[in-house]
Amino acid sequence: MARRLEQLDSILSEDSILLMRHSGPLQSIDLMKQSLGQLAQVIAAENKEAVADRITLTELKSRLQRKALRPLSDGPLVAKQ
Image (cartoon, rainbow, N blue to C red; front, side):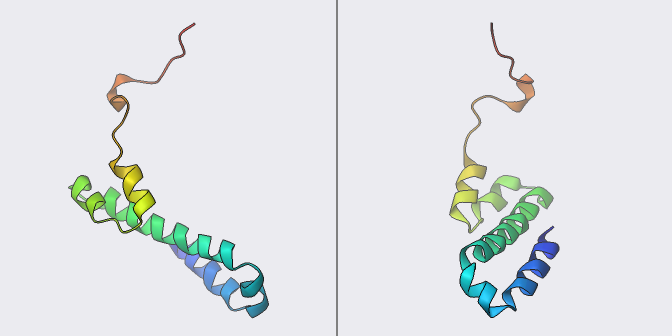
């Protein structure tokens, strides 16, 4: 996915008019590419917490380091009636 986003970003950035009109969305593509790359590092790591500490995207880092409300091993949430 990251490679495809990079290709898309590269193709769209070659059009100077498109680049001027849509610089925000094009920056979002770059942010998605960075996020995917950093998430891939965490997934591939043996020590995920240590790698998450080195994440440079602050919003992604805070989401990864946020404590769960309950352990995932408790099973799915079921609404009580």
